[in-house]
Image 1 (tube, rainbow, N blue to C red):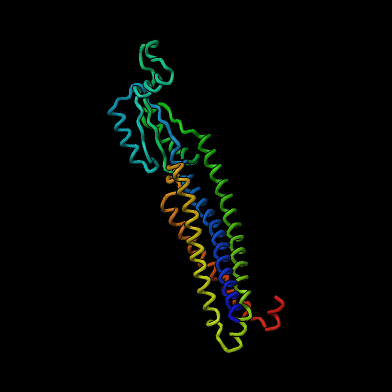
Image 2: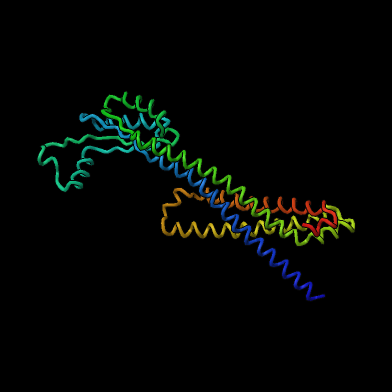
Amino acid sequence: MVRKRNKSGRRGSLQVVTLCISTALVLVLVGLVVLSVLSARNLSLLVRENLVVTLVLSEDVTEPEVAQMRKSLERERYVRQIKYISKEQVLKEETKAMGVDPTEFIGHNFYTASLELNLKADYANRDSMAWIGVGLKKHQKVKEVDFQQDLMDQVNDNIGKASIVLIVLAVLLSIISFSLINNHVRLGVYSSRFNIHTMKLVGASWGFIRRPFIWRAIVIGVVAAIVAIAVLGGAVYAWYAQTPGILNVMTWEILAITGGTILLFGIIITTFCSYVSVNRFLRMKAGDLYKV
């Protein structure tokens, strides 16, 4: 009798461990989806905010006029950052690139100064640039406005396609994750179906019967979530060790949201699946338990 109890106890412990591991693997998948979706949004903002609008200035522009123009542009709602590139700086860069000073042949610095604008992400698109370009050209000392229209369209088009793919992938993987966790939880409850029926026969309420299964599901969800967070955290740290700049895309806020989502998803899904599975066996008659 004692041997049977020991075997039963070991079998139950093994089921719990197996359920924790399988749930953790599914939660890792869920975490990857959440991390990818949030990081893709951050990446799209970063890419769009790094698109450059170049204002080529007139040759006779003076430093005070440039300073006044910068101050005026900094007040515009669409400007995120402004960088001034002087004629001398352009000459220095071109001399370094060509290996020879062009002024030695021409006799003067024929390059022009420019302002490089980084727009806020919401304005880095064709529609916004239509009216922004008109406003920028109104400045008297602006000779030309170059805003890389083809590159901007390509970036926005690729970001839109990637967003749709990620959303569809997230929905599909969420459904798959729910199905997998639900099957694992049902298998765990299935082994106790006769105990459930016995407790029901002696007059135990459904709430009393469900309670230990619900608590076990919560514990399994928490443990599985902690394991999944540890696995993802280790993977992100290894990536960070190779590419420190990854934190510009995967910020601490995104990592915290991903961890919280994994924990919440693990608890809610395991609890809900356990609740549904126990209720299923509670509704069954004794004869039906042998047919399941």
